[in-house]
Picture 1: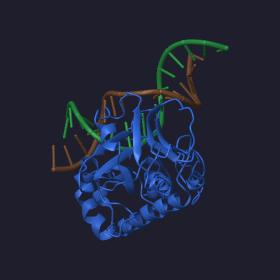
Picture 2: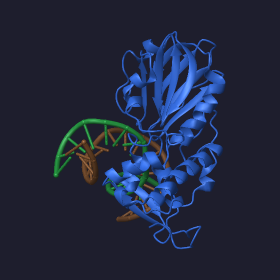
Picture 3: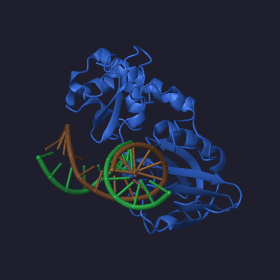
Length: 273
DNA sequence: GCATTACCCTGAAAGC
DNA sequence: TGCTTTCAGGGTAATG
């Protein structure tokens, strides 16, 4: 389940191998992902060179020359694999990007919730998927002063708020659970009930959880691996996610699990208020 | 305008 | 053993 730390890990890996490469050809499986891949997608990439690799929320954004952007979203089960040598494609490979130096990039996604698209625009904000994203939680703009008024306006529960990519871009279910545990806030709390002090704890928890995960190259259960096929190590740092029934690391009370908007929330009812 | 729900998808695990 | 059902969740369209 790739979230922001996993995409950041992938972006860092890909920068070291893809910058300067020219796309020679694109082969697609023909199956739709989250939405059908645009017929013009291969033509928009072909002949262009990768100049920059960025991350916006959970999106990988590859800046191309001549002027265009290639965006990749991994959905739930998407994987990007880089190959320097020829070889067979694995099952559920939906796109293979061949470069002019005979290396290639594979996009695999067995659930097909991901997204591949290209836009011939001048600025990154002209990409609709990117333009609608909320603030990056690791940007200097993200602070209590920014967050508190937004929380006060919202009647949503705080867990749903954290998962809304149009507000804060990058958190998914795993890290939202971990953030709320660290901030000692119950996932069901309505946003407008959070105090300024709790908002400060929330801001710090978001930054701390994400930075820790990035340092450990993301969280791997069964899905995530980087472009070399290596899993991350942050699963060893998780304190509540998928720990139902186990003891809370702070107070020893059993971790509980509940359904919130079709997603599982893991929390400690003793520590989190 | 905002919040909530249903849906897409497939492999793994659980249940029978 | 083998079949069927349930569950997982990111993003979004539909609904309230």
